[in-house]
Length: 263
Length: 296
Image 1: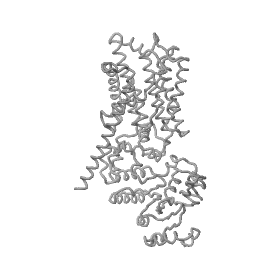
Image 2 (image 1 turned 90 degrees about the vertical axis):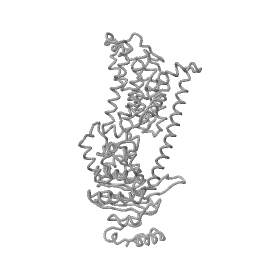
Image 3 (image 1 turned 30 degrees about the vertical axis):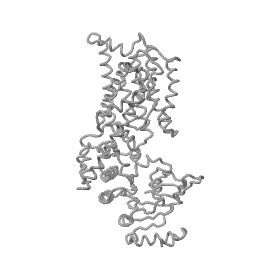
Image 4 (image 1 turned 135 degrees about the vertical axis):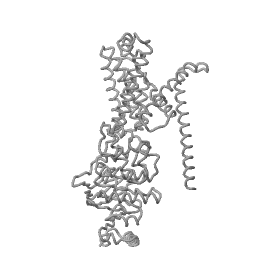
């Protein structure tokens, strides 16, 4: 699906502020996988997403999407097959436009056509999709999105992204800015959509419980490298304590010894 | 007649969130192209087409400077505006103004068609109103298309439009170009109405446009595009009325026409202050409402 080959990203190279955000990282995301990414602040999680999504281009290394080299492809082109949700619920929708206009913009990817596509059939389709969120949004098509709560906006963003049928979705702590109740709702919607549409997913989270509870594979990052990558049965048996223990051991040891720990 | 210009300014300033100073140059550009075309004896309808294209191109240049050279949008607009000043003089045939006396303009046609029914003033007024309404309706329609909607989203949330796989640079070019094309058409109408084109016609146009847009925003609130464009036009009329009063009655308090720009500036500042106060109050009210909800 997506493959990163020995990718590095250095910010401000050659200056006193030089910062190696990603260090010689390789990662392959298989179709149908649901990967959770965990790591402390500055470990390179968000930079990893920015590289996959095309916001930044790697300093070294290559990125492939379904075997095709997309290393230099601009963000807007990559967005045609990658769906992305940010922590800030305001980033996924246009606040001063109505719900139906927001959904219309997101109903197909790529350059928009000079066509009047919003008709009553579209509206009833939007309404039926919104009804599935069970948030009462189906009666508010003409309302501005800016009037919705953060949880509603994030749920809407999620729905609109799913409807555009992306091949890969990147979730960047998308429930972190919500209150616990809404975070719960958005997260359960997320898992439902992932199952229903068989979406390949990579999700960043700060919450170890979440990282363990969801997904088929877990990646831990530190200082721009993947220091732990577990999947399958090993992932299922993972506990928070076990993860903390591994985290501690890894951090106290030299990075060259990672492989020992993973066996 | 200024209404078309104000609609153009509205597109860049409010919808695209791109304060575009090119309009100070594209307004006289429209006037200059119109005047030269008419003096050369071309059909005014064809000349209006040329005016639209020339305005479109000047917007494209600004957007390209902004996109490709990563120049801030204000500076990109000033650059194009400055270059247009020289171009306008070229278009006018190496002079600063060009009279249209006894030339056949669109207004001559309008007057001759309607001479039997209404006075010439009423005919010209009706003609301008008709044109403004047609353009307004076309803009309304445009912003209901998928392309128009994504332009609307661009000024609101650029990241969202990128995430939809649309090239935001191309979208900006379309928006800024369309805006300047409208402004140029407005300049062309102005030249025909005044009976001459002048390179300095555009001075302060952007400020007049902004003032009109902002006055309009005080009249009503909505997220429907046809209401937005209507209020922009109403704002434009109100602004003109204010300027008219300033010109004719300011005399009693020792104001001269040269003070009008100062008045416009002060007017914009007052509008900004009131908007700020309103915003703070609504934030306060919202915070109160949230607190109320939590109490219950």
